[in-house]
Length: 81
Image 1 (tube, one colour):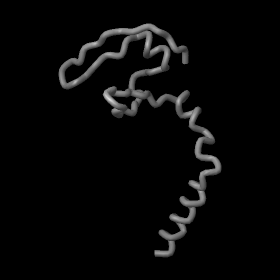
Image 2: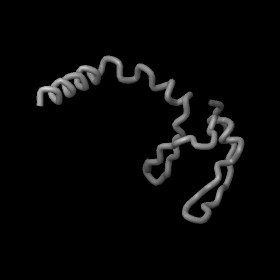
Image 3: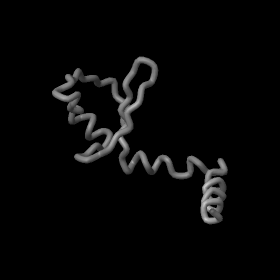
Image 4: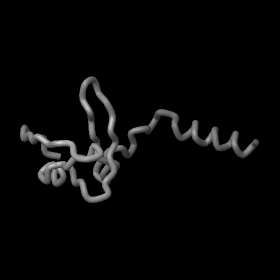
């Protein structure tokens, strides 16, 4: 990802739809059907594309947190029911 100082003004269309400028779609590798997470951060609306490149950055992010053990313990409890 190349951080630029480039900006663009967009308009919301019918039903709240908007068009992401081409240069941003290329920079973030957004193709048709790409999903995105939308959330509020202070007074900003944040749109975070969920691309294969982004998913790759998440690899190992939960390592050492005990998430796998908790998942396995939960599955074991479910089997015992």
